[in-house]
Length: 389
Image (cartoon, rainbow, N blue to C red; front, top):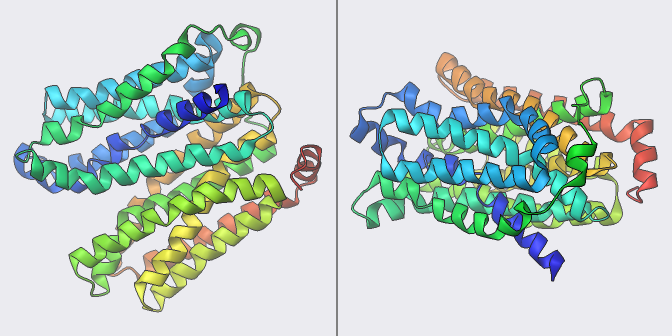
């Protein structure tokens, strides 16, 4: 029963890590119209949380050392829930920007530490990261898909639509209450440092950044790319939904396969090649549905593996949290630039051809990094010691 409760705690916490971001995107047009918000400010509502997820990730290890793993995750959930709920009390441009920052800080703390939580409570089962990644994807896709229906059903109330996701946060806080009374001995015994000089941690950070850059670029631009190829708005929205939904079964199964059979390098490169095929199909103006399926399979596999790597590369929950914090710090800072790069190239050239070529380059660099990770002698020794190769 304890393990089921721990799994529920991971699931409900991860479920809260994206709705404060993904619920905004479908409503940006309505926000601009009702609040007089310009396009730059509107874009900040999705860009700021991602930047915060990178900038404040290192603080996760410092706070965990001070307060303990479980209490820090609880505090992070308080920040996310409070920021989301505040949008229902006051709806103004200033409040939306402030809550985007506060929510991003909460996500930056919870994200790396959930990897440490998995390492602590499931030390021999890194495949449990699939619960984390699937829940995160479900939370993001649900908030994105349901925002417009909720908005229309409740008298087009922006405040209600944006704040309703605080319900998930309240549930998470109730689930996590039993953990905050637990004394974390490691919190006072160990002081963590980011592995800034560790070559493998640097490679992992670069991989996380390239992977996230592709993910956020595709999430932001799949629909516009579809429309540029002659698809209707409804068809373009459907393609984005397919891209998101296909990630769920992949995220659910791939970590378990890697944990069972090993060969992380093979699966990493295979997922990247899937993305490569999807981009090439878009460049050749082939039917977009199969292209989006390939892209979704690649993205759905790479993200949980990026979360899994700090767990299997380290020996303790403290190390796993520190590696995750470093990879997510650098990774999300790189990721925030991805959609901007694609948008800038589109603005300059007037089409997505050069932008898609840029995506190809990003994927090929990512494959090189993955090969370096998989072929490192240190990696082989670590994997053999854990039965992962």
